[in-house]
Length: 134
Image 1 (tube, rainbow, N blue to C red):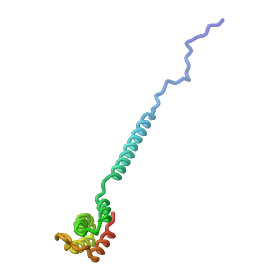
Image 2: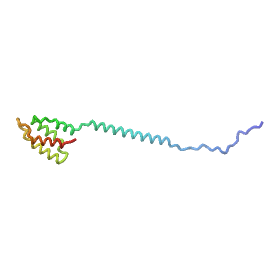
Image 3: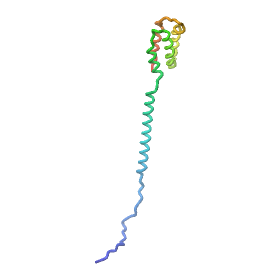
């Protein structure tokens, strides 16, 4: 038999080349983007819930203005003065209407016994309530 030479030199096999792989960096970039999106969405949900549950003084005072009992004129005059002041700074028109209303209510405040609210004062009060909005 013939002996084969094991040390045959092959010329068509090339050495191993280093291939630049960027998939790890793509993974890190996508992961960072997802984390930033998650934090942003969580923050927006937190702000929405916080603002939804926040106490709104104007809404509260508007409900109190709507619920004022005008059968007790002295208490009604003080309550209108107190709760109406919340809306007076919204515009010059509101401020003028509020000052007119307060001037109509002055006669019902500082006396021990007062008459029922006049029709003029009641109409100013109703008009002021309609002007106020939240």
